[in-house]
Image (cartoon, rainbow, N blue to C red; front, top):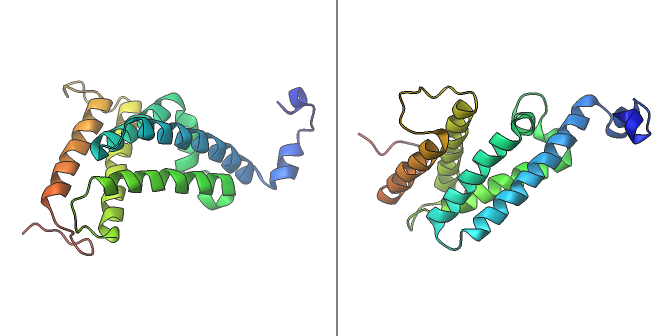
Length: 175
């Protein structure tokens, strides 16, 4: 690849300082593109908070499906977000978009800490189902694909959020 670009084999290492920083820059560029696409899909969904969160989930599924290696590089153990500012900024942008979409689905009175917990739970659920679908690990007996399962999971989460008050510090409201 370096020869095709007319640079030495060592040029990327000299410029980035390490293989890890180079890979983080690649991951950051890919994640930034995915965040741009996600933001456009969320904006196109209009003002309805559920439609916006659903659009974000669909964008995330599309990102994992279209660029699984970039996704794995950005969110896997090979690099850290702190390894390159582009990766860090893209991850913050994607997280902020998720936090905004989840926050829009909350009833009045839910504090910011609870929105953050709920955003993390939603991301974990979507991430897990999407990864299981990518690796064909959802049993054939389940009468839905990963996309349908993600949307159904978000529907359940949203219904729960709308019937619960803030849990105040992560303690369960169940008895």
